[in-house]
Length: 272
Length: 331
Image (cartoon, rainbow over all chains, first blue to last red):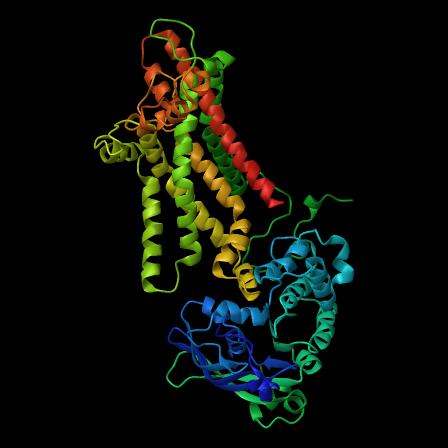
């Protein structure tokens, strides 16, 4: 297995979970984001912020090879996870996604019961433990157990939007990934549901590394330890805009004393 | 309270470029007249459109309904000039030939549809193949059924490709399968395209392989349109005459010898007789109708009416089944 757990030799780098080394992602001939260097520490919440079209979701999806599903999408550079390049030709993307789970912008429960929504991922990952326990544990971690325990056999669609999103988070947690990627997980939710998910993230970061894309800067301040600000600029002679990483630091520094003018303007609401 | 009709423009503006009148509905206005006339016209068109269906059902019911009895299903057609008899062999034959066709067309059609919707991406070759197959499917669905019959006739029947046999149940099934195929491919393809991409991402995001995603998530989600398409494809083929005349032909006998159920012959021999209709001419209701309706014998003509009735009922039943499947899975 090329993606086996790292041996003790990499123990010295345990604080580093994912690192992007000179990553450029393009759709066909159009470059979406260029020359990103980024190091994501383990056990923390990292937020990606920036205006629309700056490539932050593209970068997020590159972290578990979700971009493979988009025709014509191509990545240059290296994405290193636990010391291994995720884009090495011998890496199996299915294994990558079992280690690095994902929660999407729109809640997307499977058209199955709540119980089966969680059991599905566990089963295909060869889980051999007690399924009832796993379902309960996952739902508890996603702060959904109290609301869902009496209707585990009901369809996942019977839940409200916020509950569906927490179900999707429970589904992602159930396969015990090391990293959870969240692509604007609260953009379709009301403030109460958003609050619940944010509280949950504080719990989750004790056992998982979380990377979240958000349009809501207050959310980035509330949930994240580190923040990366992406921006897009018109390309010389090109037609579209190309995204790039402007600044990456502790969240407090990004929002209080950023080093870049663009970051300052963005976080203070002067543009974007 | 004053009726609204009295509310003539409360604050008329001098020099307005628009003509404003009261709020009362005036049927004599040109736009209202046109509206009434056109509504009547399209309503008549809608009525005329369902008229054939109602008339066909009524006609077949009156002509053939009175002949319905158990005997119809248990007896063979009589010799010309004799009364009585049934169409049992044709009923069985239709089910048999349609079954063979479904057996051939459903796996190929659903498989092809899955490939088009889920797997044909990435390479230039795959994309070209996808465009070609989609186009070809549309063309195939427009090919007249008699051409399908002639095609199988030239390919299988004339050449005696199947164990030296000419007309056979398998040949009939193949001709009908060619007719079913485009419907099944198209509905599978379209049904899978309706499944939102978010569901696929969700499955792939929890580490499902492409195969697992298709089998466990996308296919079940698209079950309704696929099942509906399959049932409608089968129903359409079951009533076809032209392709069967060239392939399965007709038979005045049971598909299997009557001794197959309780004969004195050995079990092995009887089991081997099961394949008889596959390699020999088989009766079918549509061909029976064609043959008997054009004879001068009134007994045979009324049998043709009875067969028409049963065939229409079977196809109606299949359509109802398709609707029921749709509602069943929509819940």
